Image (cartoon, rainbow, N blue to C red; front, top):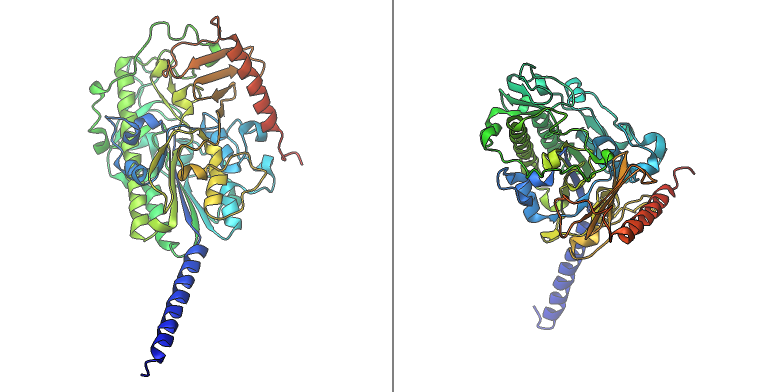
Length: 481
């Protein structure tokens, strides 16, 4: 080969390499990120070991937190299932759609796209497994019915039928059963069942299995897979081995403060309390143990789905979100379950793992309503200007960034505005049913209501004005057009 030809040959080789690399980069850029949305039902962040629980270990959710961003200031928009799920799936606050119960938001939003429908319209395969929109638990799970689902949101949908409180095993009704004579009962009732059989006997085991199957089937196309686990929603049903780490007599209850309810408005006393449920200390401890067993069972199912994602080679192509529809009381203030606007009920766990983003912990305020615009943005989809959430994706690069100065939440009786220093709860738009104000720096457990104490009049007045302005903004939407 002539010496003069060598530089030309090198030039050609470099050009070919550059073209190959450019094509590979373009292909990687054009490839759509998948979305795996995992939601638990009635889960308080305080039950997760990645959020500090020392008794209830949740290694699968911890594994996701170790590679994603764990949010410590995430709030639901409704403190019970129906309005919360309708809100984050529709992209509107409950008082915008009027969905303050257990119905689909479809009538209110018309032909506007829900979160998953937006992805479906953009060429994604979209599927739900079990409970994403509201679905009755245990009734809907026993029947295997759709509940308040929205068919337009999905390419396919799958229900996960299970025996719930009828599962063979050792069961006890804890609620309104002071003499212990009542057998295990159905409905929205505190019942524990140490069940016989394996994970696949129950709804969540079947949900995990179906999710794993779908990940294998659709790994070569962009997908939005929504996986809804129903535990730890009552009844607290889990295979017997999950109960072993939580002997009931060793469970610790939250601190009980004498006269705790004295400064709480009547509207602020939760619908389920130790008093009206007639649960003595033994039953309260058993409720905590049953709840933790249900969380541990749910966590194991999350692990199966994460394993399937990894085994399908999808980790670097998939955004994974884990959250709950709202929080849960486990005896704080002698309150149980959801609905309350106190911290335990309004605060939710939220973990977002995005390929290429470093793990982090973010304390900035976010709302579940923000998932629709944030995940759309991360996947390169347009973010509809009409939806009421905010794009929180910048927080994944800079956890110190702030998108909101407060979080907003409702329960049908009242409203919560949660700022960094203050938690303000107002019952009724006119505040005639009472107000609560807590200094969250000095009183994070919300024991002392400052609303009627001298010296806090200006703070209360500011929040009343801020709430009125927020509600006006919420209602100023395009739904009537």
